[in-house]
Image: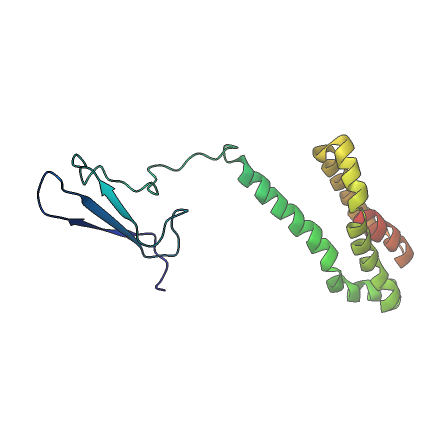
Length: 176
């Protein structure tokens, strides 16, 4: 197979010039993409009154239809991407902060690592509860409430005096 191309070549083969002429049209696609039910070569027989300019493949599009939601779906895609980037970024980059937390709080790596483990564990195990809340109150309300709780938890974690408080505020509250 050659490189994928969206262009198509059309060859017209005509028989003897008479009233019973039949125009054969062969369409060869240079790519693997074609209309459903089409093969790479298709023969079409048109009657006497067929003009070469009037023969169009049903695969030709003259305009792109508008999106059914007016394009608002792309806003949702971008917002979802940013939300997942922030949430997963906080949950899965705890290792970057681990050394600093060990030094600041003067605790062992094992106990301090529980902070990040609790955050990831709560983040992943709250799914069924959040799903039930979303069914009852709606997605928008639950997302806003979760964002406010998470924001408060991460802001309050800056005031923690020991690892146990950090586990509760950053790990448990931040993971919800």
